[in-house]
Structures are given as structure tokens and as C-alpha cells.
Amino acid sequence: MKMKNGYSILQMKILSNTIGVKKILLTPLLIVSIFNSCDTSESFDAVITNSTDMDLKLHFASNSVLSELSSNTEILSIKSGTSKNYKRIEAGNGIGLARLTTLKDFDSIYITNTTDDILKVYKEANAGKNIYDIQDYWTVKSVTKNHDEYTYDITDENIR
Image (cartoon, rainbow, N blue to C red; front, side, top):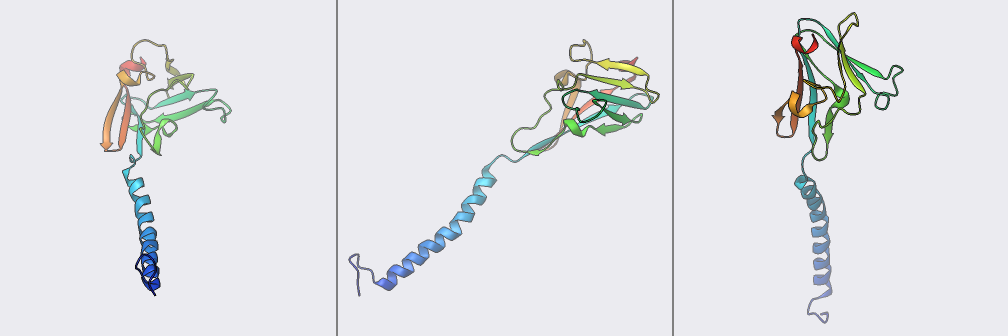
């Protein structure tokens, strides 16, 4: 039995099933292509290098960022001649651009020796080499296409 459009009922069912199968196959393919066309996630590491002849502690102080800590201060201990990542200011795999742009959330960042003698205090407005001045005093190295490494180097002349 033929329908008005010239197709039989069986041909219409086959055509209908074919269209349904195409939709089922094309939908996941479309979703995958959408995700692949998005920018891949970017990330960065924040590395502090101790190029001095002594072991140091960096104290990051903030009433807002570190309010969960009783002293509102987080300490990063770095042995002489080594480097450490500071995870709190790093950007893990997120969507879009990831770059270190500011340390303004910290009230101050100061350096002590292992006996807690204060060697240097950084505030955002300090002149000279300043850890807050990312553009002038941090180096940026592209590790992979989507991952950068920001490094701040502490030298003997910076803390004396």
C-alpha cells in the first residue's frame, strides 16, 4: 500500500528509523566537537626561589585570604639554594586564561630567617624590588602550551 508521497508504510518506517539512528549517532559527536573546540584549560605555578646563603621563611599575611588561620599568616619555608611552589596563589586547571596578576590580597609578605628575625617586609607600595611587582620582578616561563611557571628569586642583596 502506497501513501500520498509515494512511499510504502515499510519504507516510511525504515526512513524514520534511519533518521532516529542518525540523531543518536550525531548527538554525541556534536557534543564532543563542542568540547574540543573550546579553549583548553590553562594553569600556572608560583615558584619562590631562595638564592641566598641561608634558609628562609616567607610569611604571607592576610586577614581576608587567610582568615581560617589563627595568625592570618601562612609560612613557606625554603632552604638555601632551593625553590618551592606556593600553592595558594597558583591556578590549577581552569577554563580560560590563567596568569598571576596580583598579590594585593596579602596585607604584607615578609621574610625571616629560621630564628624568626625579620629580614625584609614587603608591602604593595614599597619601592625597589618588590614581590608584589609581578610584571617587573617575576619571571614567566612557558612550561607547556597551556601551563606557565612564575618565579620570584630572593637574593642576598634583597634581604640585607
